[in-house]
Length: 451
Image (cartoon, rainbow, N blue to C red):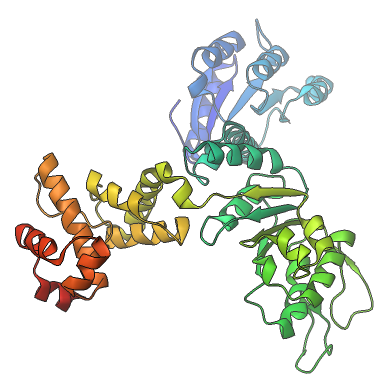
């Protein structure tokens, strides 16, 4: 059955003239339509080619052989989500109501209004597609596909992280994500939200280090009109705005202790009190916090409230720095390069072995975020660390020479063309570096000018 933007319909009716006119009308209104005169033939079609199953099936009730009720029962066994619309005669209303209770989507009494049939089919197609999207999402989450496209890596700890995120997504336990800057803490938080039951509600990120303490309460808890000078109207706070969804408290270690007390109260009571209000407002939110610090140690040093730490850390997820999972660097870099090339409409440049070697040798203090920025520069032609070598010679000596030239070029760039400083940084005599530069065609004056 060919595809259609409006939907695919299979019509079953033993009245040949009515079947032809129904198919013709639905086809004219934008549906992709096929017809069968027998209920048994319709079921055989569905069994033979599952890929061609329609979005909705329309069947007459009174037919020789398998009647409409038997077709309904057979369809629901094959595909419980397939909407079935029954066409009934005047004396079949009670039978149609019984069929509705058995799982039919709707029924129309003959002679039916053609426009009404189209409206019923539009609703049925919408229901079918929504059910398909939900089923696909569940399968992707269960199979890890959705998470593998977000939490990328073959490192065993990354696989375990994906498993834990899939398990925790539908659980309302508060989560503390611990990791260095750039390891992807917000990516993990969004995965917990997007793959869970709160996905259709807001995800509200609050950077605890970016909001000045003087306006923190107003921004996070909200305020009433006249609560302070300049409060000209009522403002819904970020936590109340996230009702039904997720609040992400990023850089929680930067939150002043006075505000930690207020956040703790919200975590415990799931209520907020806007500034200037004399009432508590219930909120249904899940809290996910992130930190690059050792909060347990900070709590022991009285630099962070211990009760808030223990309240936040119902479950802790620890993210490894990129330098401790170097085997994932080629996979991540390739992913970021493809995404950046698609975004900028740029051609994909081959990533050569010496380029990957340079990437894997780097320290990546900025972790995945820094690698992503390097991929962006690579696509735009501004990368130095990951710059592909000139020429098309793919031999091992040529690749080694290109890699060596790139390392020397980086050292000279850092030293602003000073050969002595570059040689010291590389741990080789100045004369050796000069000889290598001559052999590789690297000129100090040009490098200094480029720097």
